[in-house]
Image (cartoon, rainbow, N blue to C red):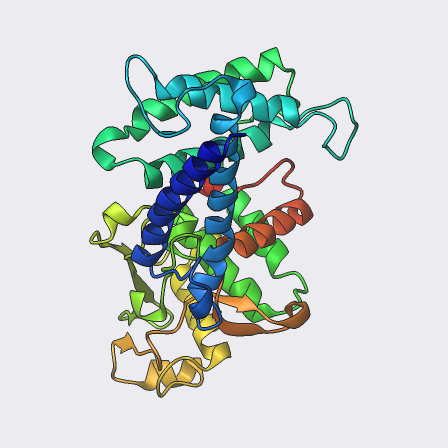
Length: 361
């Protein structure tokens, strides 16, 4: 490659990395700032791997565009999109090249290429990269979603990419009961089991995303104890929960706040979906309530709202060593998904169980 090409690649790389750095800084992340890396917050550390993936993908795309063998004349402007030099052409050829290059690198056999699921993951990462490197007025995410989805289906047939067919899974109160009973069946930590049950009930009831409850890179926010207000009712054991959702997937919705009131179930057969009871049990076991140590303390009190000692603490904490304890570190969406998948397998719910399938009911 000519020296000029190397200089161009370095300029494009630095310019695009500036976009990623700005993206990280806007989210409160400190990726790519080496002198501040050790002092990064917990949320920053969780998001570092995500931004690194974007950086690796960026380098890969720039190398592809600038490779003379690919006969592309857009190496000085890799994100240029004009009628004469459409960006769709470069992106299409890049994905095809990645599919062909994956042959022989899979774990199963040297003759197979990447799986369809891996290609979908690559697609989502690349679209996120484009959103950071291309000005908002020039990048239409909805159009790219439709276009790349069409490409994915064509490539799956053309290159015979392996992948299990997606099955529509319907989740109801009975499936929730299976998860709750299984989670409470001799768990390593009852506190950990109860907090996961609370998250399932919230997602099932109000349809929230996992990224609204847990740390989900690159979004550093998570649900805190102060976002959940527990109010006593007129009868013993009657607790109404007000859930406030402040964190949404996508920085453009940072100012959005939604509040939901979840009342006790009307029928005894649905007590496994009683969020108030599980939250009270969780708070008492952890000693998180101010002035209350037992249920009797709550019932004898004149306070209607059960106060938290530290409303800023995460409502869902990461598990400690070997899963015996729960720490004050916020739980990540990946760990929550792993716990859900493991519990679903033990409960006899077959197939892949992503967190979002709880919201399909």
